[in-house]
Amino acid sequence: MPDNRRFTLVRRPQGMPVASDFHLKTVPTRALAPGEILIRNAYASLDPAIRGWLDDAPSYMPPVAIGDAVRATTVGTVAESANADFAVGDWVLGLNAIEDYSIASPGGFTQKIDPAVVPSVTNYLSVFGAVGLTAYFGLLETGRPVAGETVLVTGAAGAVGSLVGQIARIQGCRVIGIAGGAAKCARLTERYGFDGAIDYRGKDEAALVAAMQALAPEGFDVIFENVGGIILDAGLMNLRDGARVALCGLISEYNVPAPVGARNLWQLIVHSARIEGLLVRDFVPRFGEGAAVMAGWLAAGKLQFDEDIVEGIDNAFPTFMKLFSGGNDGKLILRI
Figure (cartoon, one colour):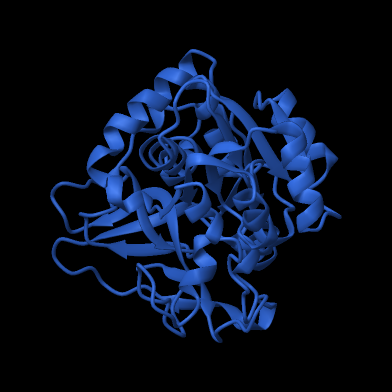
């Protein structure tokens, strides 16, 4: 069995993670038990959700244990198999870890994939993976947009947000996005087809509220929320009656020891609106449906997506931190 480089958690981050919270170590790979497969990971998806898994706090998944490799969705090939349904060389997708090799018992998130039906196997970590399906089901099932409505997407230049805005446009909605910096805002309108963009940098809550009102004077029917903090608070001050807030993420609060949380929730009462959290795992039985629709839109030229691929497990920590600096352009993927 081969040796295995693993990007392990050695200390729970206090606020913003630092390099000493992690350690890249090499360990032997154990022998397979009956039914297991050994996956040679080719790529790992780096997502904001990973930050939450590093804390010892109640969540939808158990925390990453101290000493364990950091959990991540990966694509790779079967290197060895003790399972008759999986042959050496098969490509698989699964919730594994940032490491050279992962041992998995097929079932749940572990599934075969066909790299021949997509432009790149990395697409299973972006437009055809959890990212694309979060955008698809999160907007359509939680946000429930109707043609003619106005949709606000925060974190709009990110992997999920950029797809959400495009799907909203396909549904006949007017779409406003919030992103950091002139270049990202230009990409929203010029590449992804948003109707307007707001640069949050240098703006306090009052300035954000004013910018939103300038672009959507009648307010928002749907907010797809990825950021939280003052951006969410500003959005709540611009709701229309009956608005829906689809809560996908709160990345601005993940590294804050004592997050303030939303302070304008009373606007939900004022506007008979609702806020609802979403997890893509709730739609696992419908993944095939969503992927088929997304593939059709992609083939028709209705969707654009970007991937930011960084080479080498040695770069796991600085690559992960790009999520919190806004330094990535598109879906952030680590080539192991």
